[in-house]
Each structure stands twice: as C-alpha cells, then as structure tokens.
Length: 523
Image 1: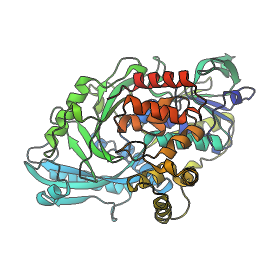
Image 2: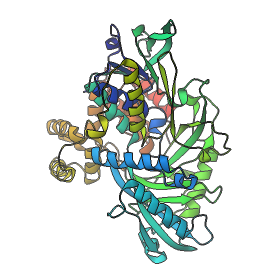
Image 3: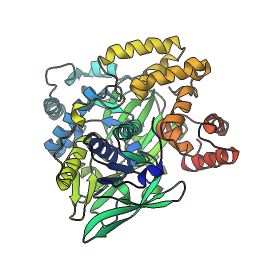
Image 4: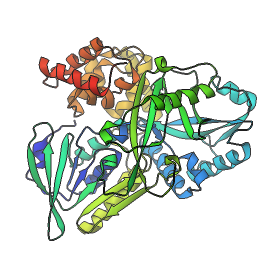
C-alpha cells in the first residue's frame, strides 16, 4: 500500500534526497533503495505530473535516430526495450508499427529496409517473430485499411513497445517505498544548505499542510525535468498529443508529415487512437504548457493527409495533452534535430543533475547516477534493477497468468474490454480488486462507456495509490480525463464516490471539481 506521510521525512538523515518524481526520479529512488541507501523521493506535484505522463506512451529504440547516425543511443534504448518487455510484461507490451513507402516520398524502400535491418540487429531480434517484415502495396493496404493508398508502392512493419507512462512511474515509486525509501508527493524543495562547500541538508515544504522541515542529506539528485534551474544548459521542446476515436487497425503507423517532413505516430491506446506528436521550441513557464490551436491544426491536417476512411475535425477530439522535453543545447535549429540522449551534471558539493533522456532508457541512466552516488558515498553495491521483475509484475509464465486471471475476471462479470487492461494496469495486485468486487459486485461496472476502467479502480486507487487531488486519480492513476468526455455530472459523481475514502467534505469535493475543471476543461 502506498502511503503519503510527510512526517516520515523529519528526524532522519538521508544519503540522498531525489527532487522530481517523474520517470528518472522514480528509477533513481527504486535503484538506490534496492542498494540499501537511505533515500527520500519528493515531487512538488503528483508523481509523473509533468513530462512523464505526457509522453507518446512508447518504449522504443527511436527508429528515426538512425537517420542521425546515433547508433549508440538507438542501441542503448533497444536494449532497455527488450529488458522491459521481459521484466515488466504487464506494464510494457509489444506493438508493431507500419511504415508506408510512397512514390516521391521522403522514405524510400531500400534505405528503409536497411535501417530496419540495423534496428533489428541492434535489438538482437534478427531471426525471430519480432523482426521487421516487408509488404507489397496490396498486402500493406490490406493490413492498414484506414491508410490512404494513393501513390503507395510498398510498406514495412517493425516491432516496438507501448506502456502507460504514468502507471510505470507509479509502480516504481511504490517499489522504492516498499524497499525503504520515503516517498512524498506534493512536497517542495525550498533550498539546499551547505557547510564548507558541501551539501549538509535540504529544506522541504509540505504543499498540503505548508509545514517546513530541514532534512540532513549527503547528496541532492535533481530529476526535475523542465523545472530545472534556468542556469542549467537545457532547451525545452513542446510535444502535443490528441486522443481520437478508434481505427480498425490493431497496429500503429509511423508516418512522415507533409508539412515539415517530421515523423509522427497514429497508435492504438486503451481502445482509442493516440495521435502525436508535435515538436516545437517552448520558452514559457513549465506549468503553463498547453495545447494550442496551431498544434491541433498541425496534427489533424497531417492525420487527414495520411488517412482515407476518416476526416477528423476538432469535434472528434476526445482528449488532449501537452508536455515538455528537456533537450541539450547543441546549436541545431529544429528541436526534432536535437539528440534525445541523456547527460549527467555533477558538482563538488553533492548535487547531481539529470538532463534530457527518454522514458525507455531512464533505468540505465538512473543506474549511472546511483553508481556515481555510491562511489561518492564509499558504497560498493551493484545495480539490481536489470535483474528484477518490476514490483507489480506477476511471477512465472505471464501468458498462463493472464489466462487464469482473465477467467477469474469473467466470473466476476467484468466487461471483456476491461479485463486485459485491468491485468496490465495492476499486475499481481489485481487480486485485491477482485476482492473488492466480490464484496460489492456493482464495482465491476465500467466507470464510463467507452473507457476500459471499472468502478473498483476508483476506490482501490484512492485508498492505496497516494491520491491527494481529484486529477491525481482521474488523469494519472486512471487516465479518464484524456480518454473520455466527462460531463459535469459525471465528474461530481466520481468525486463523491471517493470522497469518504479521501476524507473530503462537500466543500472539498466542490473545490476538487473546480481544480480539476481548471486543469482539464470539460470537452
């Protein structure tokens, strides 16, 4: 059970305070706690409330980086993709992508075939079912019936993987806490205290009670993403995604934008379609990033160029979200041309700063940070994360486990659409949801039509997943705010459903609804 207890930070001395509870902070905390270090993980907002819940939901090598000849980055991310597919089959699942080849298009057949062969080789899947495949014009058009086949001459498919980014972060935070880390969301780093040029303590503030404490700490790890200090050498790029109605294809598409030649994706996600992403420079405050009309026009225009069976308009948009990527300054003009590789900045005072990176390679990068931390602390302890299942991953044969628990879910009258996602979202903890439903069969009902979530999840997440605000529950624990058009009445019903669990009175319920509608306006 994940519990939020700001008081646990007081009266303890930490080897490291990790500031920033996105994917990098979560992996660092989990890694360090498994090595026996005394760790505190904090975030000024909710877990994964910034970049790490606004990604393309992909665990991938980054096929387009081969065009930049960044073989090292692609090799690293593909290695991590394969590891996560093995260590977290509930959280990371395979997804094939189709790549069309058009007459006169930017992607031609032979270079694409060569690039995909290299991609497979770097992933170690040259001779397996996961290797890329080539298709004739007719075969590819039949595989992707929504795709415009005018001037289509051939196509390929290749393997990558998909996840729920916010739940991946949450699972790692839960694992870190179970391993001994103190993890507190809505906790703000105020300042660092030093003596003789060395970090001695950090001052923290509880955003809920406004209480401040000073915590002895030997190191500070800054994994704040776009909330890094303006003094850090970084550049911010905005990425926007839209959620749209489902297409008949079960596979994704990697496409090239006619407007600017950029790569974008059309992917299935939770039974709907995820369209993205944009890639534009951003110079505003990180907490003010939003989806703008130009972003919507760009994505809808490019999708409508690519598809023949739909013509999406703004009225088709079910959900939308924007996030910021942290990039290194390297003098390149377009954000899409800047490397997504990661860098570590370390000073002599005990402060380490994570810069850039990708959700796919965050585990490996976190291991480098914790290796450095251990050397600084004089601790000789190896990284354990590569050899362990993720905290909620079922043990044994995952296919057999899925079958057994799908049968149990069917016996509880859980909708077939919801069963697969329930198992993926909760892993081996799904038995706790089954127990809730046995005590109250009405909890097996879907929360809203068209979204694969059941009412038992509302109570389970509110009780056991460190929910503070309504949007924590409805955006990151259960992504309803981007996967359904919730009415005002539905939003109130959901808030009132969990009010008793979260000790909300009527005034708090109304306040939480107002906060939620401000952050995520109703469609």
